[in-house]
View 1: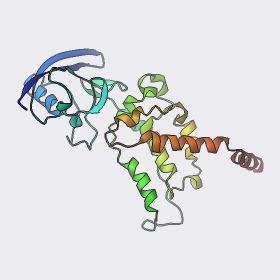
View 2: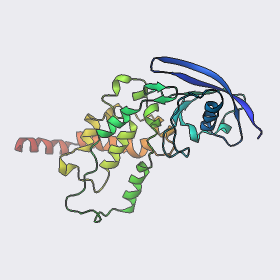
View 3: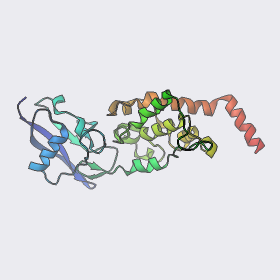
View 4: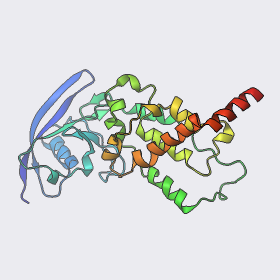
Length: 256
């Protein structure tokens, strides 16, 4: 394929506001959108702000929205767009703009700190942990997350309702809660941590209505909804509404 000039619209601005600017940039065979952004910086807009690191789809840094869809700039090939198509690049909509394509994603790190970490079993020492391979595989899927926060950005609970952010952790961190809750060696209950109740009351699991938009944009093809959020919802409901669990809680409260 010969080189050609493509029409790009790139959002330029900062916290005080901005607008889309038009550019025509050369595209070569095999290039990804991040290549074009770098060429744009080198030839026309040296002050364009964009976050990136590995250019291999593993660091999650170059998250943005391309034609309205949350994507990684480094994993979106120019060949998916027609030569006459205008490619529009904007910052992640769910998070505050810092400048140009760079957003403030500190919300996600704050939510990460709210999730209680893995609690090792008290009767086992490091090196003595044993798990079934099927349990390892189930947890390993979620460990593939590169924290690009595309799932957080596309989740309409966060994206469309700023007021929900305080009560809702978002799919990435509900997935973390689900991973820990299904971990056979996690001794959170012995430490007084109820992960199912925490998912409901602290992390806003009830806000999720399982539209699967988070799964659709995940660059690691993690089945966030089917393998993490839906099973976590089922366990949380069982924990809250099972009559035997309810009776046990009543008895324990009376004994206390």
